[in-house]
Image (cartoon, rainbow, N blue to C red):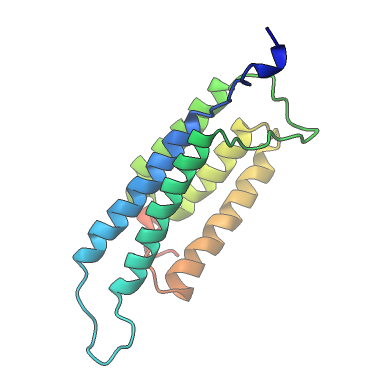
Length: 169
């Protein structure tokens, strides 16, 4: 038997199928949501729902193309950065810590407001990811939270909860 006749094994990156399904699902949700949009003024050359239809269609097509590429065996090139250890597993304590921080922020943002929870989000995330300069992290978190709060609330006119600091900010 000639060994050169053997078919090479095909590598399939199965998580890419999940990503393809997610992108396709988001596209379908955008398209379904576009159906419910009210038409704009009759004199507008491009109606508001046109962008939703375009974005939803592109997402569905991209999800389909990713699924086909995955089925054909296309795999992304692995990261070759010097600071990445590809042989190591997932750091569950870091992942669960970040998830806990996000859950706390979502649960308390209405009561405490963005200024406090934004500072907490930055400082706690930095701490979980390895920073050991707590006072600096809190300071940077406060500055970032206040800049983003004023940027959205005052600059863009988008109300962000002030929480217990309502009337102070």
